[in-house]
View 1 (spheres, helix red, strand yellow):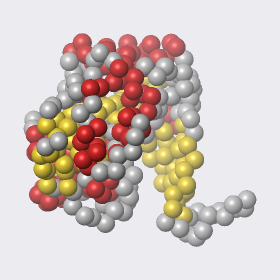
View 2: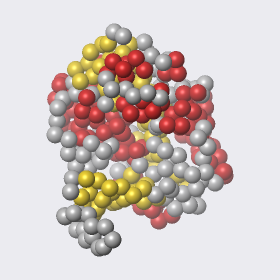
View 3: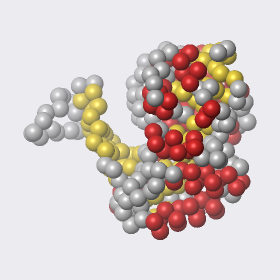
Length: 312
């Protein structure tokens, strides 16, 4: 089983405006979608589409939390979410004139008791999971080192963790003694991490040789349409992806995490794992809905992905 962790989930609401977005007046909309959101739940959705046995956990509360519980049930995913007193957040996206304006709530504040309860539950959950994914930000009330607390627990069973976060949260993880099995910063997130601009795949590859990344077996740096640079142990790879018409690239990074988790569960290795993981990001970009892929196109897409070892 693959366990996905989304500590700050949301109900994602999309408003598709038929015309321009007008300020300080009424905007009427006919096309509305509401889904269980958050980076980790995007991972969950893709894993289910790949036929994996998936469980999802994190914090949920209030009526919006109840909505996500129902969505998880409808996905046929094991619901291991921890209840909280606060209200799960909304995240609103307004699509207008080929632009997207987002309004993101910060989410509920987690009490010290709720934070401890989740860690206690993780002590149980790790015995059920073969792989664990952790995605996104932390809700209010949790220390920036909270992911390190989770890694300490997963380290007891040596369960591989695939982590997708950024900024101070990623910095804290890199300082921790127990490291994730895989991290997936994008190009700009890696640049922020090391404090300088990275404009080419060679610059990215050089950055991946830094000491703080040495003990992480897999580092996958996504670069949008320019592909990816991947570090596996002491080897570096540049990955070229096929040129496709990107309908909605939002969630492609989450889909890559899902692809690598699924690939590991299927015992894929080396270049085959790289191609499989990156394929899910490409297929997500071709779909209108976030966190969706057309699984019938997996084999064809994998054949078009080129993986080249880099000598830096």
